[in-house]
Image (cartoon, rainbow, N blue to C red):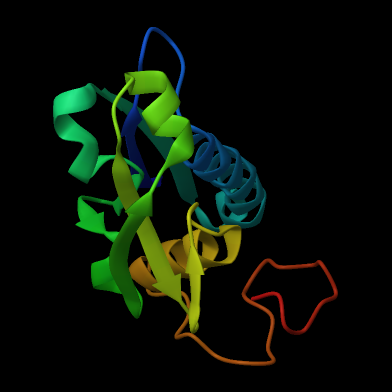
Amino acid sequence: MKTLRIKWRHLDVEGETCNRCYDTGENLNQEAKRLNRALNPQGIKVEVIETKLDDTQIPQSNTILFNGVPIEDILNIKISENYCDSCTLLLGKNTYCRTVIYEGNEYEDIPAKAIRHAALKILGLMEIRTNESAPGCDCGDKNCC
């Protein structure tokens, strides 16, 4: 069976993470389950690896790598940053964290749609298309995938 390894890197302060990293983690876990349901019959397993970072590694926080390749190198995603109130509270100092600009919108978490597209693209299962569902997508929303 072929394995897609998705590594999620995020801040961890005594078991807590910031809101944006938490939301990315929720999106990733949901998409990994969905991808496994769709791809297991094709002989592909999706594995999520969580890497906890400390406060000296903030620039690397809230990143996702697909078989070692950052999501921004797979999709047309630009990386930016803005003030993160949640990290500031966790760390006790003003903190600026990663954001992603995807499909013309800036997100503080990495959206589920981007995670799904990057996974399928790195596996060679789809080119990004508009108004078509991705393989294994059964949500019924033609704009979903």
